[in-house]
Amino acid sequence: MRLERKSVKRLGVMGGILAVLAVAGLWTVRAAGPEPVIHISGDSDVDAAALRAAIDPLFEDQAGETRALIVMHDGEIVAERYAPGYGPQTRLPSWSTAKSVTAVLIGLMVSDGRLALDSPVPVPAWVQPGDPRGRITLRQLLAMTSGLDHVEDAEPVAQADTVRMLFTDGAQDMGAFAEAKPLAHAPGSVFSYSTGSTIILTDLMARMLTNSADPDVRRRAMQMFIDGRLKIPARIDSLTVEYDAAGTMIGGSFMHMTARDYARFGELLRNHGRGVVGHQIVPEKWIDYMRTPSPRNAAYGAHLWLNRDSDESALMPGRAPRSLFGCVGHDGQYILVSPSQRLTVVRLGMSPAREQRDALKAGLAKLVGLYSR
Image (tube, rainbow, N blue to C red):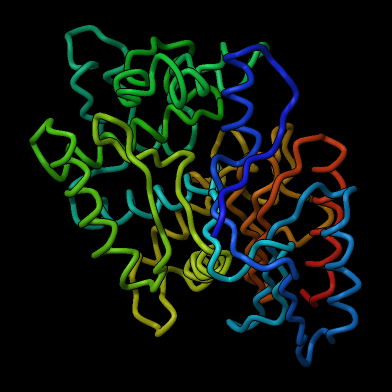
């Protein structure tokens, strides 16, 4: 095994550090061996030759650097390909696909009665009389309509709240950083994509599991919940989450899994919360809720992207079934789920340029389009 990190354009000392972390996909553990792993079998619906013709362009430079791609149809892997140095055992970074995992964990807490969708979120920093943030609900955080003044992207990049929270002055206690933000809009009135909202959710989960502020206690409590309620029952064996120094799960960005386990998570969503052996792991109603369009953005549900027309769309409306939904991460991480086609597609890699991401989305739409609706 060896560690790799890519060179990046210089943005100054701090910018270079941030770019190495945020553009190169963190540190990636690469499997030994120079030869790519390719397995394309196809099935009765789409043959191997057609699959190969759709998959090959996704591994060309125009689409960026595709490191892993999996196609599952009717619950079976019909195509699996890796770039040289990567393989079935390589754990790859999630970036924002982690948000959907966090939403599933929140759903388990709602089903347990620990949390309620339309009750004000119990954040200690917001409980002072007259604080307007005290009206923010769990539903609004999940739909990215909290109204909090969080700047997801900015130029220069070091000024973005997400970068500050993950890598600089907010990194020691990400929950406190996100929860300290004032309101920019009335809760529920405006869609604004925010990794800070997800961090507030993960801090909330830790506080629901333990009264202790000790970081080790918080980490252990959260990890036991993840293992017992999702990782083990869903057989997502490689799922690895990261925590900040305060013991808060970095559930908006920093999870790692093998490509097969990303696909297994997609299948959990496709099968309405049922695992690989048919057991109901997540309530079906919660998966339905995650797929319900937000009133402020038809292309977003509850920490899940929907294939609907919108000014803010991350998928491919008009080029894939309207029922398709997906988990989307920084620079081209995709878990695409198309229930009507009985299909799950995972693409992991790096496509930092807009032209690369456009080519990638077009290629993925073509791949999905091979299957009948």
